[in-house]
Length: 490
Image (cartoon, rainbow, N blue to C red):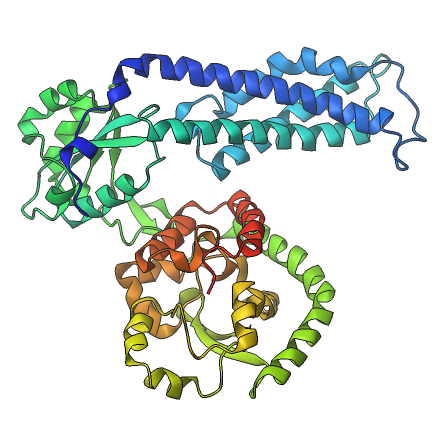
C-alpha cells in the first residue's frame, strides 16, 4: 500500500481548532448523559404508574412523584461517571469498553438511589419495579446517546477533526504492520504524520509514510509536527534508545507515549506480569478467555442456543426434506475445522453442494486458484439450487448451534477455518486457536465474503484482542440486519 505524504504525511488541516475539541466533546457528553438519564427516570415512572398496562395498572400510585429524583441525583451521577473514567478521553469511543463503563456507572448510581430510599424510609418508598426499570433504561438510553456522539465523531474524523497527530519511531517489519493497521483504521483517532527510522532493517514502511528525520532530531520533529502520540517499535530500538525517549517524554502531559510489544503478531491473546525471583516477566496466556469471562460467554451461548434449538426444530425438518428433494446426498455436511488449542472437530452445516463437487471443480481450473486464495468461490458451480438460497440467507449454518451445545463453537467468535486454511494465517495462527470459532463474528457484520482474506484475518485478531461480553451482544444484534439484507453472502 503506497500512501503519499499529502495523504498521511501532513499535519491535519484542522489543527487550529484542536484546542476546542476537548471542551466541545466533554460538554456534548455531559448534556447527552443528563438528557438521557432524566428521560430514563421519567419513562420508568410512566411505565410503572401511568401506562395502564395489564401488568402495572393495579399497582398503587406513590404518595410523591419521585421521577424528579433524577434532578437530585444528577450531581452524584456525574461524580460516578467521572470516577469510572467516562469523561476521560482515553476511555471514549471504545465501543463495547465504553458500554461496560456505562453499565458499571449506572449500576452504582442505582445503588445510590436504593441507599437514599433506606435512609429516608418514611418519606421515600422506592418501588422495586421502578428501580429495576430505571437501572435498565438509564444504561440503555445513556449508551444510545454516547453511540450517537461516537458516530458523529467518527464522521468528523474523516474530515480532519478529533485526530491526534502520531509519530512512529522504528522501521522494521513490526513497524510496517503497526502503520498499516493504524492507517486503515480511519476512524481510530490517530493521524500518522510519519516515522523516524531506527534499526538495522528498513522495511516497506518507507512506502507508506515519510521519514521525518533522525532520532537526534526527535524534539524538533515533535514540535514542528504538533505530535501528540509517539509510538515506539520496541523490536527496532535498543534498550538505551527506549530509556532515552522515556526520560524525555515519559512524564510529558502533552505527549502520549506508547510502545509496541515487540511481538506484535504473537501477543494477541493477553498477557500478565508474573514475578519469579522478584523479576517481573510477561506471561503469555494460552487461551484468551478465563474465569468470569469464560463463564459469561458460556451463559450467553447456552441461554440463546437452547431456546433457539427448540423453536427452529420444525424448520430443520422442513429444510432437510427440501434438501432431499433438491439433490442426492446427505442432509448434513460435516466440515473438519480447527478448535481451541488446535483440537479438530466436525462442524455441522446443511449440505449446499452436489456430491460430485470435486469433479465439477476439476473441470473449472480457473476456479481452483480462486478457491486457494480465499477458500471461497463467488459463482460456485458446485452449489445446488436450494444451496444458493441457504447460503444467501445463512440458513446453511443453523446446524452449528449443536456445535455450540457441544461446547465446540460459540455464537460469536473468529471465523471457522479448516486445517489447510490455517497456513493462510501465518504468524497469526497461534492466536486464532486460543478461542472457540463462532457462528457469527466481526467478519460476518463487516461484509462477510466481500472483504479480502487479509481483512478477515485482521477482524479475527481484533476480536480476540478486544473481546468483551458487550462486544458479543453488539455483534449478535448487528448480525440480524447483515443476514436480512444478505450483505456479502454467496
